[in-house]
Amino acid sequence: FQVESINILLSFQSYKFSIYMSLIFFVFFLIALPVFLLVYSGIVHLFVKLFKGKGNYSGTFKGIIYGMTPSVLLIFVPILNLALLLWSFVISIFGVSINQEISKLRAFFALMMLPLLDSIIIALFILLAG
Image (cartoon, helix red, strand yellow):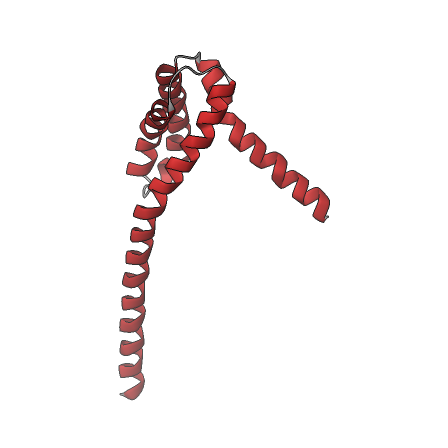
């Protein structure tokens, strides 16, 4: 009888822990996502300016937000993640292109500069560490 009551107590504690972790993740998501989008939009805006963008920061931010909306709304549907990522990127290209008055090709390259630089930095760290 004691083993069963201990198992029930442990499963209840585990259940409470899951709820607390879910709440912590949700609050972190609500705080971290807007901060990430503000910083990411600022960095992309620098690259947009390098590609002769004519708009201001808010135009870049709008383009990024429009693009990220499908991914953020449907992030919990695992089957759709890759398709949503690609669709979000396409929408971001159109949003940045329209808001910054640049071609879609320039918007594509402006959006690809940050992942490209990240990849180069990671490759350099791997080469230097290995």
